[in-house]
Length: 315
Image 1 (spheres, rainbow, N blue to C red):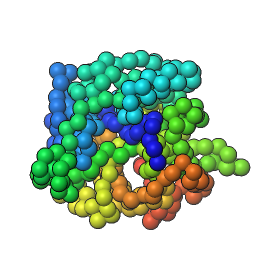
Image 2: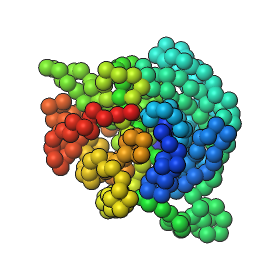
Image 3: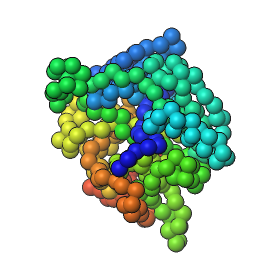
């Protein structure tokens, strides 16, 4: 599949209550790699197999949650076109350009607020730092993984799940303007025509972002990081227990996306997920539909029942 528009999730910017405990969690337990700090007190991190400079941005604040999510696009020309398309759609507010260099090694970013109240941004350029696997130079005769990995060590930032009220407007934006597909949906109502959840893909993953309809604006449920196997998800549970990290749910399997998962919290209360599996998505794949009455196995396939805390706790 030729990816010519939005390529992938590029970064997520999170608010944390104290930077010290947050860095211990994200570096030593989750196993991300610090790449920079700036004069605003922000810390930039990446997963080991990501080549771009950073995929996670941490900022100390009085309230936990997500500041914004960034998306890598195919080129500067694509960035300009999509910015124009977003402006002309009339679906977004607070549109504007963030100058190059505001994130380290990153070109200009186009920022906008989507109908669910979340701040999104697009960018085309970010510095390449590599994955340190090459044995005779970067990307030359590489090993399967680098030395010195810590903690869980996911390979990449994978997706976010977000809560907001105007699901219809957000799905319209992502599908009709940004070119995403609806891989899976959750439908409610007597005739099952009222969408309450959408799992959207810009790639061949089962989802790159998901939205759940809730009577709130701009809320963050979790950021997810990819692992290569169910065995590594189980190992993540061992790492979390060994570090006395608060586990939310799992290890278990989702019905939606078929992914294997474990959820846990950073010290500020932001929910993290590590995730493996799923299926290959193509734009011509029929959308999978779940009914709200089957939401138990849709979310937790093994238990086949809902967990109220999982649904109601967000930042």
